[in-house]
Image 1 (spheres, rainbow, N blue to C red):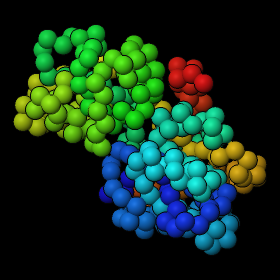
Image 2 (cartoon, one colour):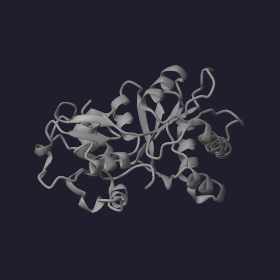
Image 3 (cartoon, rainbow, N blue to C red):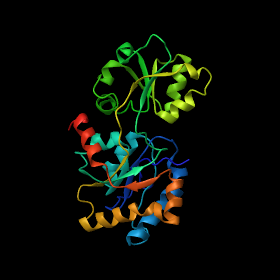
Image 4 (cartoon, rainbow, N blue to C red):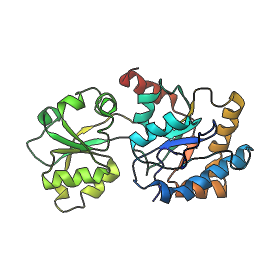
Amino acid sequence: MIVLAVLVAATTTISGPKDIAIHITRLGGNSVLAQPYVDSFLRYIESAVGWAPAAMDGSFHVSKKNAIAYVARAQPGIGIMEPPLYFEYRQAWQLQLILQAESRDLVADQLHVVVKDPAVKGLADLKGKRLWTTLADYPRYLSKVVLDGQVDAAGFFALNHVHSALAGARGVLRGDCEAAILDDDQLARAKEMEGGKNLRTIFDSPALPPLPVVVFGAALTAEERQVLARALLGMSGTSEGAAICRKMHIGRFAEANTALFDNIQKRYGE
């Protein structure tokens, strides 16, 4: 199952402004298994935009560390990435938001802090307790956006990074941690586990953003941005494009909800 993460070049060659960086962690996976899907995506874009065949390059990595290393080394021009990475590196990478990628499989519009202990009534009861989450590498986003500024996650919890949100749910059920962060679908699946009916939500996040589609700095001209945006907006409306989107777990590309992104940027800070 493909997870788009940073489209990292498979070789050590320097990438060009039309290469794409994607960082998404939700479904796991690895660069080797993802490469055929990535290649199909790139070839579609080249054809739809009118760029030369093989003008774009890319590959797949899940981890934040590898995503950052790729951007530093290859300096790609285009990105689709996890919202936390976007907000953390928006200024450093001069990211320009052009579209959003919508997907029920790859990103959640709301997250929940989930516990099992009936004595835990709210976040205050979790001070110093173990929280397992896929967002442990993004403590500022977790604190300011997901938890809406209620606590400073890095100092308040004993944070532990997990590669799967359901691993966090299992940790709660086994007693390995006191809390985990899940979305609606993950919580429904967790409740089907042994003892899962005892899981309950003590905090709901505000609305969270879809996946930002960005351009790095001045990598593309204004005209190139426009034709790229048009091609992506129409992708799910073509038989070939829709099939590629389904394989990549993307519902569609859409105009960016700038009001939502701006609101979250205010909470996150510069």
